[in-house]
Amino acid sequence: MGHIQITDHLSLGILSHLIETEQVSPKYFELKTRCMSGWNQVQNALEKGEVDVAFILAPLAMDLFRFGSPIRLVLFAHKNGSICVRNRQQGERQSLHDFLKSKVFFPSAYHVHPPHARRYVSE
Image (cartoon, rainbow, N blue to C red):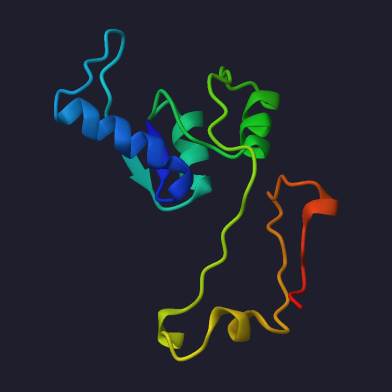
């Protein structure tokens, strides 16, 4: 299974742990995970058949399908939410409120949340 290292894919890590500790024993599959550095790598691996399954952004999956990749949706793993990170060099010197004050946020081109739910400028 192809994925990237984000909290949205935590269920994969939990399942892997449960299998490794023999708390769960899958009947129909063998789980091998492949952590990738970004969405393009996941898309390419799926397109080339290097992975059988992947967590992938919906717009990328739709592009793959549109261009003839034999894929199908089997699980919605993420339906809402986003993440914002800050540089560790900021450390704890500044409160999160002060850090976000007057910051401007730009959504990714692959952002799937409706425009009315986006908040670009913190107050």
